[in-house]
Image (cartoon, rainbow, N blue to C red):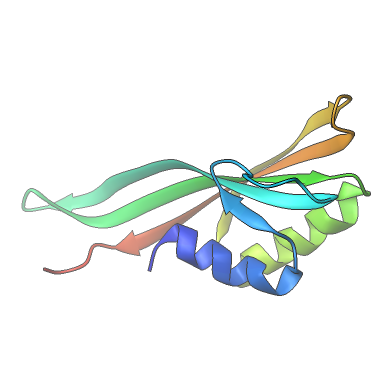
Length: 114
């Protein structure tokens, strides 16, 4: 598994369009963009890494009240085994009329044997 696949699985029941990197279509009134941030090797022994720490940012863009959706996403992410490292209101975009709320997440994975 990977963080991106785990996030897409967790977010699927929300019926919110989700894309990675940038939203490529005409944006609806609410959507999510997943931006991968890091994918580092960790927990070393015998010159080999045994853990991968993957981090990403979920950017919620909504023309609605973002607070209810923030709470729903937080609960689902935590229930799905994802660690939330930061949450912040990025701001209101006057030109698009979207609220932008960011949730930074991470998850540790064991390295796969070849």
